Length: 621
Image (tube, rainbow, N blue to C red; front, side):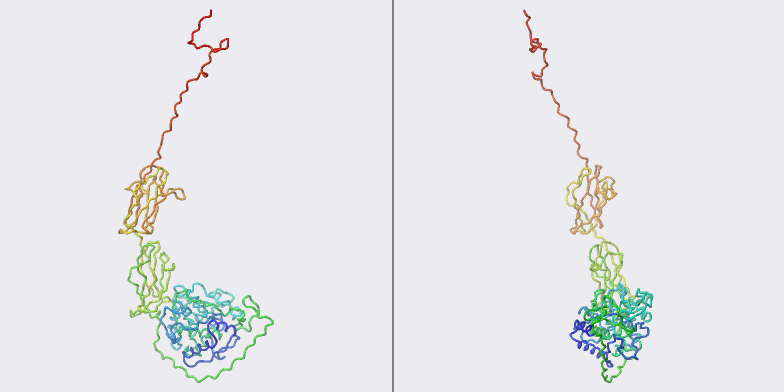
């Protein structure tokens, strides 16, 4: 145990004296009546007198609210957060700067403050500070895993401790049939405040008014924790009662010291951070290593389990058996005087979340054109019953699922804090491609207070469309048209992002799609596409490409229309291909026969050729 605690002290403090000084300072701030630090009870010894009731009725079969489940052991830094000298019980308005360790998610902080106000109203003598709930919430769940909760304060996914099967922890058989923890064999600690089901069955609360007692809801769990800590008439302004209350949650002196350290740290200043962005702790009491020995079983088990498991190795046989150090002699306590409890009726400062009575919607009209940022931000003003502004109120802005408008980083919900004027201002909202009205809903987490802000997204407009260039648009049947450029303007200025509808019609007087004219290609079924939606670019221009002439020659019109009244009509001419008659063959004339090609005369008896018929021959004598 010494090695285990020492390792973590090295992370957050230079020596044990620093933590002791912090706890001593805390005790002094709580008033007289402090007890000496209780002894370590991991071996089963009680940290307070045997006759004291450490655990309230309904504390669970594990003897504590959590069944002594594992917890986070990280310690805060040595430097104080933001407001040194502020007493831990003094409520503070959330601030916006400070170390990450001092940041508490907005919804989680609102739940702690509300639980404090609720418990103080019903049991003012308990003097419950919300910083104590924050200290317990830090070591139990890292403030609901850094504030990963929805708009109602319910964790986005269950936070479950390990099965309490007696193997290094208390042995607690299932008591809820798995209703809360999903385990029908053993119980597990559940939710941001880590109640075991048997404890929740007695102390569960419905603090957010949704009709359910849900240990996974930070409002329900924080109020239940506050009531549990105040049980038995405790006055948490008295150090002895404060120790008993914390030990009733988890019966470990190390747990007590860790919670007290965070309690004192938060008492010196905190600030809100957006839900889901809280700093997550890393070191847990059930993580083992060379300097972290096997955790013994809880006091309800007779002895630690000797069955080795992968993450809990048994000591080597050669290791010397651990010995229990003798308990230190209790020092003589100086005489103390019981502090005077505040009289009934002492005013209690109510946190902003409970003081706010109404959210007044801002008066600025929320309008934008598609794919642009709204000129005005969504705002509401938090006011009390008298109409006075309330600062420090957490306000959540939510967008409906029907819109594609978004807050920065694509968020559909954001949580902000009201300023000194009570104004909660959402970050810039950007419109999507849908042109439609929608409603932004503002609410106070954990309260039923809401306000609605109407928003409208309009289409981009152009009141004039004109072709750039004047070359005739002509193509032969089945041929392609040259690219056409059209420019859109609104009030004389270029109009970017305007949706323009292009339709091929039969004439300038018709708006009906042609059955035979040019097209923008064919669809998957092979049908010509003669209607197409285009959009002007950042320079207000659109390029019309891919126009193909049909198979029927004639004159057609490309009709362009835009929201805002812009219209253009471009004439498209389809011509037949040019036809040329087939070329006739060149006439040919037989050449005059040569002498060799003349008809042969009858051969003479002597074999010579016969004379020409015109030649005369004289008779033989």
